[in-house]
Image (cartoon, rainbow, N blue to C red; front, top):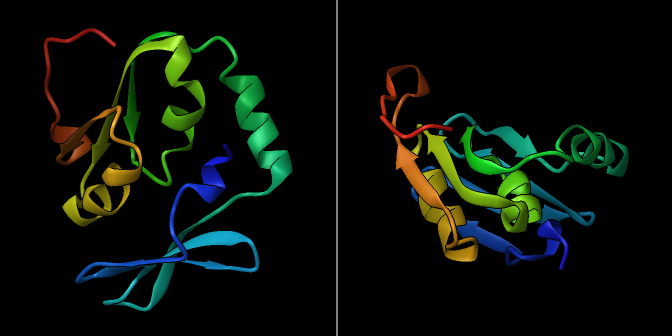
Length: 116
């Protein structure tokens, strides 16, 4: 299944709305009315795939986005952990990708003994 199809047509929280338009996913911040995330092109996804082809072990990803990396590479990794500063973004995405660890914090303040 394609990552772009795992989310429903619309999900709303207090401050964010995830919606589909023209076959793409968009995430809008309702406070500013800004689109803060959108699907990237097939060519960009292919470049990501090429640059991540050797991904393995315990992986730490700063910024959840739509969860592209975790979704596409979970079978190659021992664990995938997302650092996301907005708890509402985690709340929106996690039910559709429950296989990962999600930590809500500022990535610049994140500390751990786990080796990634």
